[in-house]
Length: 326
Image 1 (spheres, rainbow, N blue to C red):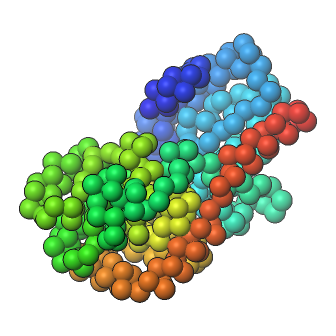
Image 2 (cartoon, one colour):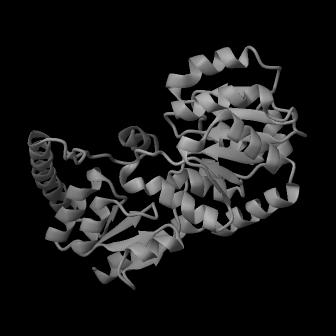
């Protein structure tokens, strides 16, 4: 995915060997170790070939070898941690001298005092483009005057969330329209459901491309979503109250920690997947739609969590780090 996006943006792309950390068996761990050593050698060769002024790592196993190689060569590095609960790679890279950017205030509790810089999470421009709600709904074929529940399960969709949405659809308040990103695996079921619903009541897409995503966010009255850092940050950027359903299998339960911070700030409701049923979804959506003052308070809290200048903050830190050489 990264290669395609880099080429599309006109950037030079060079890949190195990387493998997700797996602790299931000694053989799997041996494979990870081999990948790390190989990736480190490749990264050392690449970095020596053009000597960058600074490295930016965004976490995950793919960043480990590159940032570690930079440290070995004396090249300064900055890492960005998206989530409240940091990943293993970023914790390790911070110990080898990388400066740390964090997305939200609660994340600072996971790091030594003074070790981090709060920048917010840089977002793709398509996700933050502003549109008037009525115009966005009209562009998506929705009624401009009726509230919209935006369902986001991530780019791959979330089948357990999808199933609950289908169960609840016919009993949601009649004025509510549902705009659903299902993921490729769920679009067939969604289209069958859509064929049984009234025109405009339920609209589904396997994946919302950049243009439709900006319209979807602008049209939303509230969202039902997973709790990846980017998804929540994009909801905050648009002031969208969220019913947040963390992915139970996420590493270190990081999605729940992301949702807890948003809920504590008053930007939404944390709803564990084990408690997500059709009836519960109906109750939550009905209650929120019937309480405009509560929705408005959620929206204001979400906007207060947004960091519209996050990309500029990270860029400034990178330039500062490069100029100091560490």
